[in-house]
Length: 229
Image 1 (cartoon, one colour):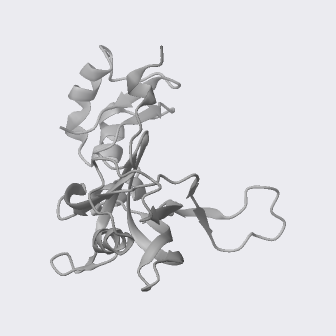
Image 2 (tube, helix red, strand yellow):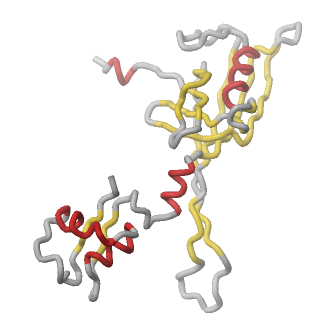
C-alpha cells in the first residue's frame, strides 16, 4: 500500500517576503502553481580575481567571492478545465493567475524600495531570491482573445541578508565556529585575539576544549572556537 504522505501531490508555492530583518520572512501574497515544473535548473558561480600569473603551475587566480545561486524553471497556466484545480488554486482564469504571479514576483514594493524577495518552496526545495527575468508565452485563446493557456519562464537570483553575506565574506567572524590546528609559538590568548578580537576569552575556550594545561599548547593540537553567545 503506498505511503499517503509520499504519494500526496504538493504545489510549488511562491511567497513574497519582508526582508527588513536578518532573515526574509514569508508573510506576503503567495501563489501555488497549478502545474508544477517538469524541470528545475540551479546554477552557482565562484569568482576569482585578477589574471593568471605567468608561469602559473596550477594555483591560478586568487578567490574573490561566491556569487548568489540562480534558480530557473517554467510552468504552464491552463484555463481549459483539462487540468483540475486543486484546493490551493482558487483562480480559474489564466490571466488572473498570471496577474497574481506578477504581483508576487515582479511588482515593485514601495515599502522595501525594490521588487519582492520571495520564498520558493516545493518538496525539499527551499530558495530565497529575487526575480531577474520573467517571460510569458501565450499558446491558446478563446474566440474573443482571452488566453486559455500560457507558459511562464522565470529566473531568480539567490538572496542573502546583509548579515548572512557579511558572515560569509568574513570567515574570521566571531559569529562562526572555527577549528584551528595549533602551530609552534601559538598561545590560547593569542588565538582568541585573532578570532574574537579579544584575548580574554581564552578561559572559556580552554573549558570548551577540556584543556587543563593550556599555557603551553602542543603543536598539532586541534582546538575548536565556538561562536560568541
